Amino acid sequence: VLRRPASEAAPAIICETSNNNPHDKNDDRAAHAPLVELKKTVMLGPLTKRVADFNAWTSSRNWPVLHVKAAILSSHGGRIGAVATKSLNQGEVYIDVPETDCLTTSAARREIGTAVRSLDDFHAILIFLVKCVAALIGSDGNVNTTNNQFGPYLALLPGIDEIVSLTLGITLGQDHHSAQSPPLLWANLPTKAATFARDRLEGSALAIALPAYVASTQRTYNAILQRINRRALGAAIRHSDVALSWPVFRWAAQILDSRSIWWNGQRHLVPMLDLVNAADAFEIPPGTSVHRTSTAVRDRKRFAITSAAWQFDQGEQVLENYGQPNHILYLYHGFALSANDHDCVRLDFKMTMAHDSDALDSEIPESAAVKRRLLTFGFGALDYTTCVTSGSPHLGRLLEFISIKHGVSHKIHHSHSGAYLALLEEVDHRIYIYDLNTRGTVGHAKTLIYNELDHLRKLRSELTYLLGYNAFLPLGR
Image 1 (cartoon, rainbow, N blue to C red):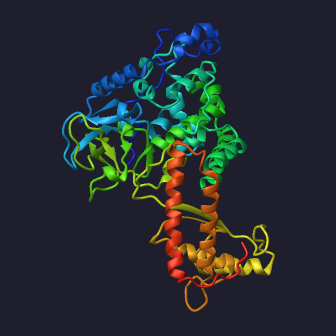
Image 2 (spheres, rainbow, N blue to C red):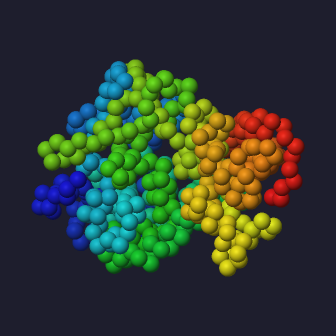
Image 3 (cartoon, helix red, strand yellow):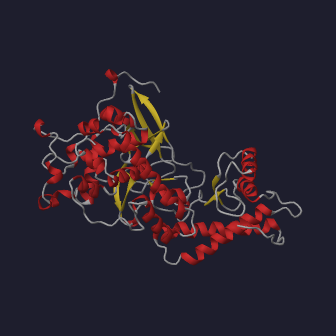
């Protein structure tokens, strides 16, 4: 895709507060206004009104195709989804939205400019999202979704009320530690996230991966603080000090990780399209494809186009096949599907010395030999993550890594079945931990854990069958 000269660029996306007095543009008094004056402005209105305003906004944008609308789904616990406004045939386009009505990297760099020049695309659009949220707040402290172009869309984002409140200097006192919240929002610190993860996910690889995700996000946040042009950011965004706070950054990162729509190698926040929920396997007709959004250029403008994956009746919720395993859905979105044809159990292995937990040291001949063997088998790192289930095509690759880890054969012939036995031991260990710790698990975490446990039991049966009940060989963990 060729970049157009600035003179031919798309119309500017406005994420600025409406303000009749230009002298008040950088007035931050709202952030310090008394709590009693701001309580009535914190909430962005009842959910029913927000949905109605959003539908009115999308209709007013005159998109080439829009055959869905936002709706509160009583059948799904009151969550928001997209329902068909007419009968849709399989393959029929139901939304055709111009990029100018999406939050994009190019818009972020165009509107914020120098402040995000040193940032990668993910964090450029993250700052742009925060800028648009801050623009909901007028200089008088009043919150109004009509203050910028994306206001009605932003009002439907999960957690938006608390972020607006934080920008106003108000803490609502809401507890995000609930297991129903997305995991990134469970705790401010990786250590606290690790405690929650152990309590809710013990036995799953996510018990370790989740706090690592929080820690990685926090490291990136600290790096952003060092790299971003604060002076330029202050000129581009009101309440820039709040925009750079960890709670706001973490929320924006979670929004991008869970709601981004990808095309042309870039992520986008797409109004309406990101309301389309994931379908369980039993809701997906045979022969349908995983969600895909394509693009087209008309009159030098780019449009994102999505077609119905299968047939939907008027008034029916439009769903998509997300095509992801539950461990991905849970870690980044905060939910798991009870029936998921793409599901598997995540297994993480790290190469250590044979008789202790120390990482491999290149100075030790034994370590050098292990590293050479890893390279011979095409492994470029000392750890290996995979997602497998019974009959998985990834099982052979996993057995190769385990054979190097334990210094045994990865094939069954004669008495050389060490890798199979090592994997079976790991699977048995995971099942044992699950059996001890799943009683208090609730909600989507319970769905995740019980599905993983089912995969592990099936995998154990397959390994036992393949081993042909060979005598167990002593093997150090």
